[in-house]
Amino acid sequence: MSVTQPTLVTDRAIAPSYLHHVNFRTKQLPEMRDFYLRVLGGEVLFDNGSACFLSWDDKLGRIALMQDPSFKDGGGLTAQGLDHVAYQYRDFGELASTYLRLKEPGTLPYWVTNHGPITSFYYRDPDGNGLELQVDNFDTREAMLDWMKYGDFAENPIGVDFDPDRVIEEYRAGVPFAELHPRCRAGEFEPESSYGRQRLARMKARLAAADEVRDSQP
Image (cartoon, rainbow, N blue to C red; front, top):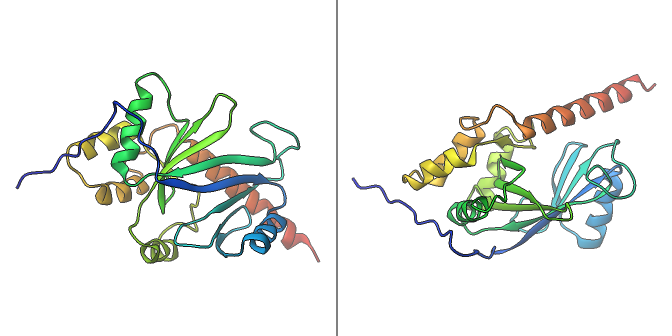
């Protein structure tokens, strides 16, 4: 049985399908959540007190909120405000093609991770603004919500990092993305240095500290 090997396009830019979501850093997640629900409508798909995703259609989150009391006022990467804008691609082949095309002149992502519902490559523009290039891991909203309910999303909403070159090598050899993304989430391609693991540890520490404060209150 022959294996179909996908063709990756690296000689031209592939335009994303659409703008998927915006992500904000905040010190007041409940107020931000309620504001966007009041203005835009929709529903809360996930909220653990540190990360919150709001949506009004079949996507994971059109507004994403990340709370950290240490965020500062003003500008910079540790300040409140816009964290990144996310653009959606049609399939992993387009995302992989874009990564390889940008890699050639030295434009590399600072974070590559499997969030569970989506797979994402994060970049920064010359001004330091975050740019997320992503693809859905599931074909339908029902499949995504089912995985979020029974998978490990509540335990790890940040993501499991993976080596993009190893994954793309297997994809080029004919392994379907539907088989690759669960293996990424399971940590098979996780590099020794994991930005996502560090972010997850900080989130869990913040949640534990918040629980201690609540437990100490009369």
